[in-house]
Length: 115
Image (cartoon, rainbow, N blue to C red):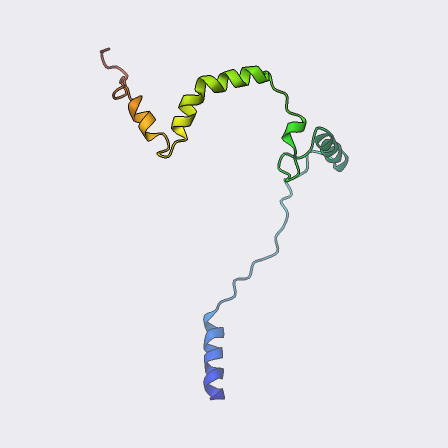
């Protein structure tokens, strides 16, 4: 039994090849364009500007400035309310889009006579 296990282990070891690589040498042509102090200054300026937008604790509302007043937003919502309700309906707006269908799209080919 031990001979059988030893033979299997030897066969497995012989079948697996080692793919060794040489040492990885840094490219001599690659040189940093900024010093560590410049990078740290840029990082400090980035942190001071309002935080990291990729962070889980980032609050975009803290620095957000809108050009519209609340009344403007409410007026825009009221004008688009029916369309928004139709597009968010149970059929995902399929009925609304089918009713607003105005025929096939007209394509023009370059060089073709105008129709």
